[in-house]
Image (cartoon, rainbow, N blue to C red; front, side, top):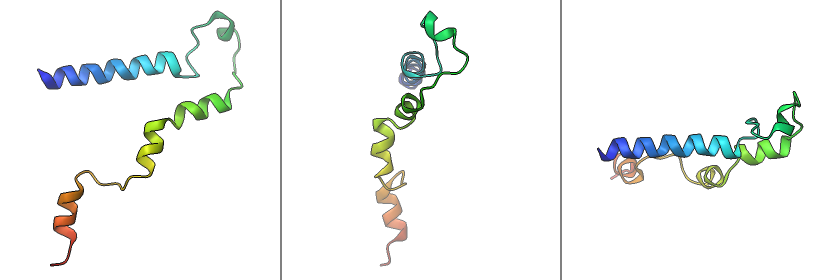
Length: 74
């Protein structure tokens, strides 16, 4: 039950994030009339968010202690 609640919460978070912050979603009527929006800086801000910036500085390891256990010479 907890796993389903977590997955449902993640889906709702992603959908809400896309509707509110995605520059390609046009809720406002004035923005819907334009075919191509000139919003490169807004799109870059959406693509490179704070979580992405944080994860870029981290090593690509899922469980670092297990990786160290199997890779360190003894």
